[in-house]
Length: 214
Image (tube, rainbow, N blue to C red; front, side, top):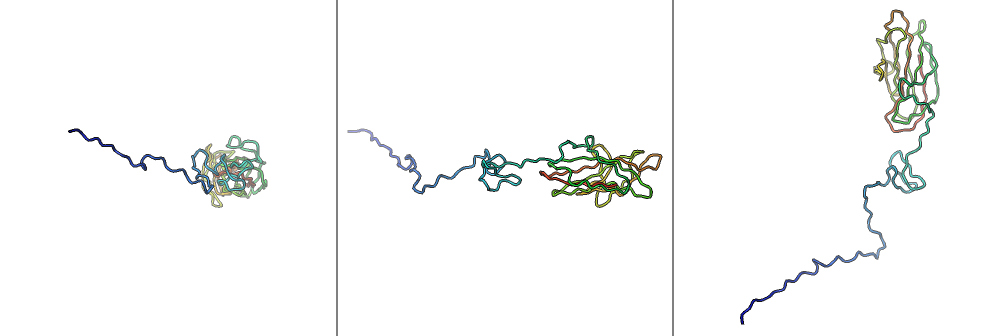
């Protein structure tokens, strides 16, 4: 008798059977995966109470990393030349130490202004010194009451710089001083209006003291 042979293919059970269950006898949970939605230790994300969060943050009682609340000493805005806070006038050779007067909620810049009067046989040197625990850029800019400010020489390591409104002056780290200047007016008066800026690029909440000079 003639005919065709029929064959049946077989498959290795190891190719189709599901993997055996994980051994749970150790009692350890499977490793966690970071979804990236809220990385542990970053602002607004979970943390262990008392554990270190990212720099500048703290772990609150609810187990979340939060930024500290800044409560500035100075509440009136004075963030540009137009809104600069008025300070008492100074005569040539004068120095006024105001003590701790404001807070840098950085990055930010605070502005102040005062009238500086010339003096007989006195070298007028407008300046400012700031005391704080962060790096600050301090600048002094002048505007002559008679003519334009010119021939400005910076002192105490400060360098020449112009304000955002185009006034000439000097800037330094922690302090700034104009060593000499002249005014282009017909008279010889060196009376000036002075602007001081105190700023930092750091993220901070730091109180600072201010002294200003003429």
